[in-house]
Length: 313
Image (cartoon, rainbow, N blue to C red; front, top):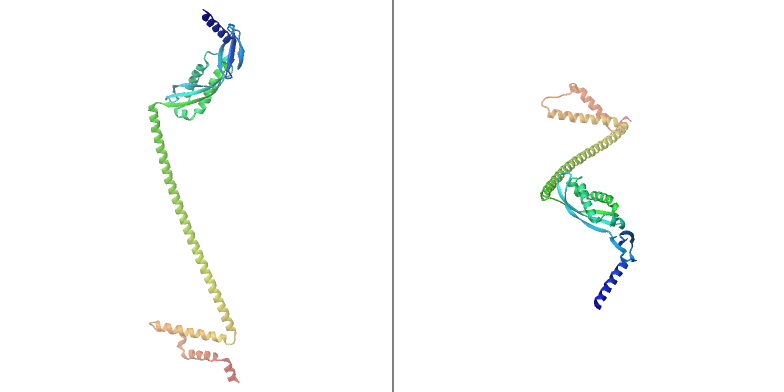
């Protein structure tokens, strides 16, 4: 009887103590109710409660929570079925609203995320679902956050984990990508051949230009060389003529020129007679006496002027 009474007293004291004191941890907030009505929100620390009058009704996690959004089938804008799942990150900002505003804010956030995700997937095509993830995440966060504000919940971000088309669609996409890769390879090869032909044509054109330029430069150099040669010959001829003119002006120069001309005349006349099949005679030979008299006169004048003067003396 004694032990039974002792156990009853211990149990009663434990019940009194647990209802009299409440330690709230740093990561949570506790909603205190008095006689079934909201009294206050207990912050982290040590708190006294009136047994059988006050009670801790709700305990809310104040840290950021990660909730897994189960995979679901969505229909894209081009009528392709895809399985999509994700993660939603939420945080309780007001423990009073999260306790009395909704019964289970986690389940509500998950269902709202799934509904919004189906709506966003239906707005875009299959190809865009892989490239527009960031846009979809932002739209889903904005829509969930707008709906979750009365619950005292803040949606921090949403991340799509996987987008999985059906096996038939995957096979079709693989064939399409293979065809696209082949197309790009053909375009690249064609572009390479075209560029090679362009380079070859430009090289030939450049070579022809260089060859033409070299020939032109060669002709210019040859022309300059011939002009220089003509100039040198003309200069030499001019100097020779000048010297001849100077020699002619000296005593006996005029007769020396005439003698030289007669010698060349006789030489050329002999060549003509020797190489001709017919007899060629100048008109002057009709009068041989006149011809030889002229020769004798020229011979007398070409004698030394000094001997001529002595004879005169």
